[in-house]
Image (cartoon, rainbow, N blue to C red):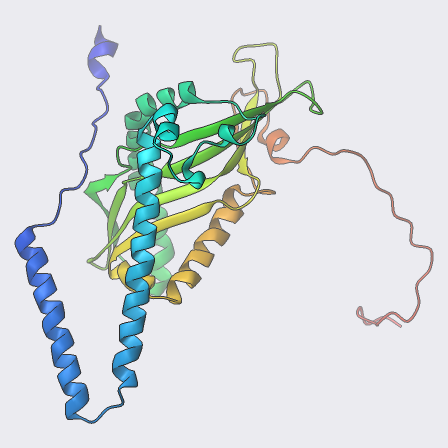
Length: 320
């Protein structure tokens, strides 16, 4: 009874509310006033018209890019919240349909999606705890060298949203694999309505509307004869997944056309270093299985190379 009383159900955080219409109207009025003043100043000081056209073109390109990204995220979010039969009957875009529609070796995974939906509030609590107790101190320590402290997450504005990841297809390999492992490929679509707000030196920044699409491989190895029957788990992407997001606050300046590509490239490189092959996320499930068994790749054989002769080599080691 005591254990039941101690356990508290996870708190399901509500989605962020829409901005105050008065504030939104004031922002639009301010931006238009600033635009008119800028045009007047350009004419007053006889500046070239290129100074007005170039920012205008960049602004139009940025707005169109954000509109396309928003439409794509909305379509993916609708597909994540609807069942597969409704998706097919609605004749959604080809890229939003589940992979089992096109590939006969992929299986439906609606039962997995039902489990993910039920587990999502608990995952949200776990991620919040990790961000506050592990990520925040690590980031603040790294930013001390650049004098960008303090770094703090806003406790009331950090949540993963109410849209869980969706498995659109699953394939389990039963041939050409070891008898001591189970290999699965999962097609994952994550069109989240998450919001993570943080402050750097008191200046607020926000990451929201995170999206991810890719194929993850899950390897259960080695199979053992004791419960839980699986010694450990490996998770990794065979190639870098498609990642999308929206930046707000001071971080919104990074979404300028050109600069956003640099930021995106940096993020992709960090993801590759963490969970894209040959890098893997691994976790032992029993104490008798060392982590190196999961980290080290399996060897298919031994290749021996014997150097017979060489000539006209550049002296790189300094020896005659």
